[in-house]
Length: 529
Image (tube, rainbow, N blue to C red):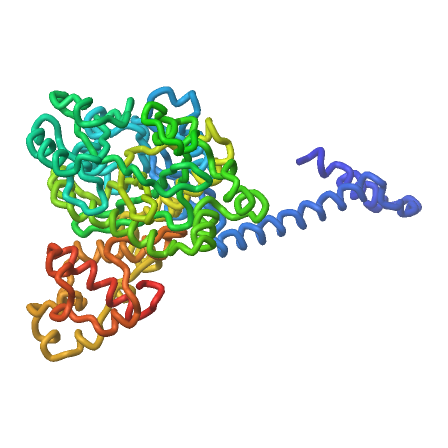
């Protein structure tokens, strides 16, 4: 400091009067002094600007760790904690999950591992065996991309022998050998395929060629008159997400689907050439099918829209086809619900889980829908076809948005402040049926079914469930609801529990409440229907 002020001190000394001598002439300030003044002025201006910027940052909330530093490893009140994803799978270096990594990176996740305080586990394998210990001690904020018991849906044998009008008739071998032989005798022209869970080596066979002693396999009717586009048989993959059980909430990606065409023309038919009727890894993509190429390449429609346009131009009803696909998916989850509930009851909360699978369908020449299989951890690699990149990344992004892990705030209400929780969804947002709740019957009792969703009658657990359903709806992106089933606004206005269809009365208690709630929300706005 002394050296900084020395020019000024020297100037003061030069200006002191000298008694008994003539008064010397005043000297003008030196150049160094002027420079000092300028530097001081600039410093004051910069300090004032910094104070102003800090004030503005505090007002707008942009000040994060600077306002209140993290303490004891936890974010401070204004700090934003970077969410962490743990991706688990074999040979990740091969890149088959690169689109999963890419989407998580874009939405702001850091990469962690099993020892991290992770927020999302994306496991390519079923984690409830290999990671059983970690799955048993999940924290409320942690989400896992599989449901316990989902094998009841994706197991090919279990699915094929289900009583489902959309699944080709199948028989478990050797347990149902007698029933199969009787059916085959009554339908002598039916062709069959024999499958195992591995789903490899499928080939059409006649009854006498089947191995009816192959334990763990099943035989299934072959759809022998398929719907063809430009002479090729194909399948349709529909990305489907289970977000909740008890009550069930299921969604499909409505904006897009996977279309895979066989690499050989179906006719002239030859059962020895499996490339005519089995979709392999070297399938033919949409952009190589002449009737779809122009729609996809030049007119810029996606796979699903190009397919729908083709059907409509040929005079077919694409809306009915997708309605049938939705019905098939709904039927599977309703049939397997009890098994899923039983498997999930072993864990602290089912809210830790979500699961996206792919339902694969085939069509016959009359556009009847047949569910062939459900794939756990469906392929998301564009290794064979780079143009699938957009679809796979949209699949992952819409999934993560739907299950509420693309948001920087906590998706677990018990971990949120009251203000934060209410900012996203409050008790007022989930209130429905004012005309029923104002009735004398509901004001004094919760016994009547019409009163079950009136705010005083709803349990804290059910309120949390309804709030999660609310957030899923407003964050569903291109996903559409399958369960609870959708409805028209007119239907919702006329609906009452006592005059509902038999399907409603077959639901368990929590599924009834979930369906009723969507009816109530549909009455408020048709966007919920």
